[in-house]
Length: 396
Image (cartoon, rainbow, N blue to C red):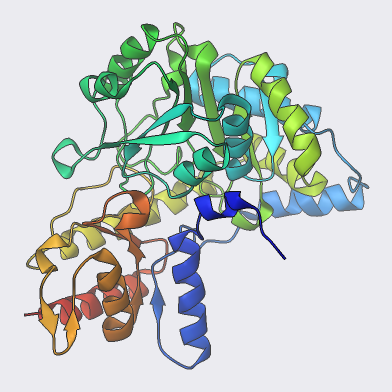
């Protein structure tokens, strides 16, 4: 069987690879602490589950419209106005099987072969692969720890060429936890005003997991709003990863394009999950806020204790649930016959010597880093940091 060439343009995400490896080692009886996956360790709030059960009891088990049921699209508009002061109509909303599908819909709808998409690094692992699947060209702009891993207006403008058609970023950011302020977004928006051919994908899936106050969306700037594709979902803020539910808010023309694409891929999203999502958006947000408080406590512990390990350099994430330490000072060091040449070697070393699973930073465009998820219990984090410190101290 001859497989399609497009498969050569992508690889399995490192996050999934490391989680799979962790499960395999656990099955062999090893005590592995998995800090690889970005998945809240909390249960979906009960009122959301109750809404799903009620939906089944009332017979909401049929096919749904490709763009999503009207009640959920209305609820998303209500949420966007309530939380973000953004005015959208249901015709501007499409519901998808996870935010990842919303991103893929948008990129396939916008990128032609040879088009360029600017992606600030570090970036979520899937952005570049989705651009490549669309036969576009990812253009990476390296953003270092000195700028809290955020792109500036000057860096953005320097990366724009006549072939630039798309800009893709996240705030709060996976993997760095960096959050863009209103002033920083305004500066980026001012650049985009001068380049009307560029669309902007704003991945806001971690919106609720914010430790510094009000979330700011680049869609708030009227001068570019019609070119902003706001992507969000339910996995992170509502602990609904397995429900597979995301959405996009955008101009009507793009929503219609994504409707056309999605009708050939998955058609309408799960009917029961959509009814539950209405309860998530319009119901009690207190369980989500309590979850965020727990993440904040864990974050403070992890960042404080990682910073105490000699050789580690780290920023203080303002959102999401990841630490993204720079571990390049250990490159060239050894423990016996084990040589650490790069971040991939480091992830394997921490796994086999410390029995802790983290993700190679190269997968996010930052080969000097590793990503550590603190979406697990405090007991696990305390033990994991202890194991990491021990393993790193063995390197000479």
